[in-house]
Length: 383
Image (cartoon, rainbow, N blue to C red):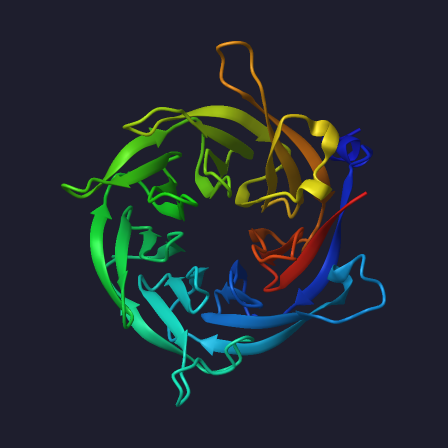
């Protein structure tokens, strides 16, 4: 019996239900991003476009499962003007601005055109015209990822040129470069901001994760480096509520959970868990708070939320992550419970991205993007 067959025979507490299949890209879909303030889902592709979908809930007699009545419609396809693949996208916390990262080395900043009253056209559903209000230049080659800080005042970008750039966001779509960080020795794959503090994490082809802070009297600097993965680190995701943990996924087929150690001054982390389950590279992870009413009760300890992962094996895995007390005078432990598994989520194709929806009332809803050019929306249902 193979490892896959033995796993599939294990009864899991949850299942993953398909809500919507959204084709349309003419080449592989690289990334998906949920608007945090508006009912919009964005996807980007090697076809150089960004597709925006509006969704709403259709009233049904059965109010116990609103996900079955979620309806998605294409609002617009943005011909970005990028000359190469659009590899990453990120919404600002306000939901009014979208950043695009391209293999042409540039970052596009997009906003909806305003009407005569100064309001964005079709403000709620995003159906109005989107225009590029700023183009950020500086990276020497392929830009791989962009991310807004929780306050929306900072934007980070990373590139195959081995650098991480930090930009300060000013009014009227003006951006100022605050630092160029040249700490990695190889291609930088991903950047992610801490949920409450101005701490930036980056992941690289050099197998490491680096954490950066701002020195008020000087510049941004690398505060610590996390080592342990034995191959490329593709994706990173912070524990969403307090940011006391950071998850990373790798070409080595594992996910690592890193605990931030208490204490003032310099930040430091230790590896708290190594999670296995994928058979190929783990390209993308996403961490969301778990609703208390839907958390698996017998997992024990403090519920840190749901961690979703996917990658080259085409499989989606969803874990509940719990912090449990350790031995006296020892750090707490991390325990993971596999909630649900879905094989061949996009048929025979690799999955490049996975992202939980952060909006209220959308618990358990997530999206994936694959080499088939499709974006799919799913829901985790616990029995």
